[in-house]
Image (tube, rainbow, N blue to C red; front, side):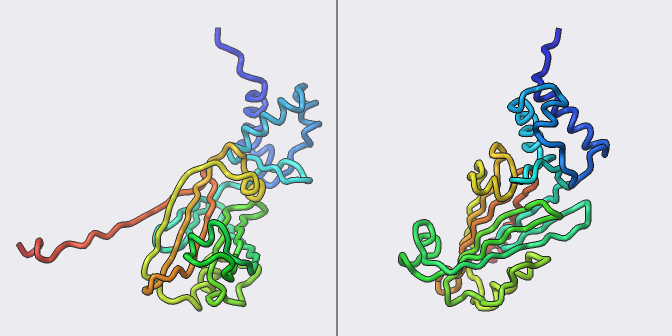
Length: 246
């Protein structure tokens, strides 16, 4: 005799089936939690456990004050190491929309080490949040010394590259890019901003770019949800001419 699956998984299976068969469509708001709990004859806690399973799978997202929505198909993100770029793939063909919030602040804590500057040095933060349809897609915090900060970065763009191009206008040519990649749970703020489950790991990338003098000209902290992110690195090995000639 097989064990009976927990009620929350039975509910999650039913909702998942309705999503996969199109009976509940992408972007559609689910009935309220109270209505769903009554429909399945379970407690609100059990119903929320079922929704948490679907949130962890990336099928459902909870928007504070509005309810639970079926997510659009996830666009894959490929971080290209050393190139300071993000590549995306989508079966829907929709474009990413990037909102940018610019803040002038003074370096403190982790920033002083990343940028190699004294505490209270003037820096500019660009908080970039990309969206696909209504769903948050990825998050990046980019820091540059104030004297290298462009003043005309658009508050909203339809392309990540246009934001990167503005940041590169005042920046000297890069001589070195150091990157650290790790997987970790999202912070409470990151989970809320990206509307992901706190149980879903994120790919956290710390990128530090320096010019030929060794000055750090940009430090970036990227957070990519683990259910849609890949990191791609290419290493070119130089062949010693003396070895090849011998």
